[in-house]
Every structure is written in C-alpha cells, then in structure tokens.
Image 1 (cartoon, protein in one colour):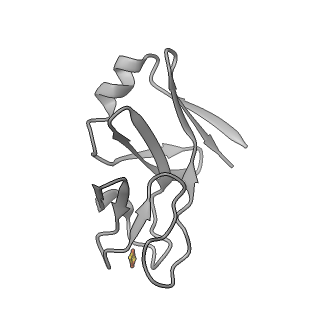
Image 2 (cartoon, rainbow, N blue to C red; image 1 turned 30 degrees about the vertical axis):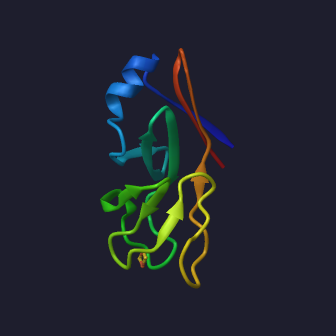
Length: 106
Ligand code: FES
C-alpha cells in the first residue's frame, strides 16, 4: 500500500479540482482519475474495466462516472458497475485534510 499527497491545504486542493471535472493524476507508475463532487473527492483507475477506454474523458452524473465509449456507469463510491457484464471499477480512498489530499493506492 502506498500513500500519496496532492496539495498542501484544503484551498489548494479545491482549486486543483473544479466541481465534477475529472483530473488525470500520475502517482508512481499508476495513472488515476480524481474528481470532486461537492465536498467529497473520489479516486479511480483511469481505464474503464470494460474495454479500457480512458475514463478521464468520461462524464460525472449522479455520483457515477460514465465511460465515453459504451456509456457504462460506475459508482464513484466503491466503483460498482451499473451496466451489464463488466467488472467493477477500481477505486482508491481519498481523504481531504488541512494538509492536503491523501490518496492510498494498493
Ligand atoms: S470501454 Fe468503457 S464502457 Fe466499454
């Protein structure tokens, strides 16, 4: 398990993450997507578990990320697949504190 930090304060993180806009972040050898919805921040694998499309180009709606290719939907909280026969999306815990955003990768 590896812990990463983005930004050094709440305001810096909020500035980095405009509401519902997916940001691509490279952490170690992984590329992940991060998105803020209200005061919650979610991290997920940037590649769709269906056929590997980039979820960075996806959209956010009602607590889900929607893949741009076949429009499968995945819950931001926990990654549960909301469509057909597709594995769940890998998600990563994100915690915002006065020191910035902590992201934990396996
Ligand atoms: S590649 Fe994402 S839904 Fe098919």
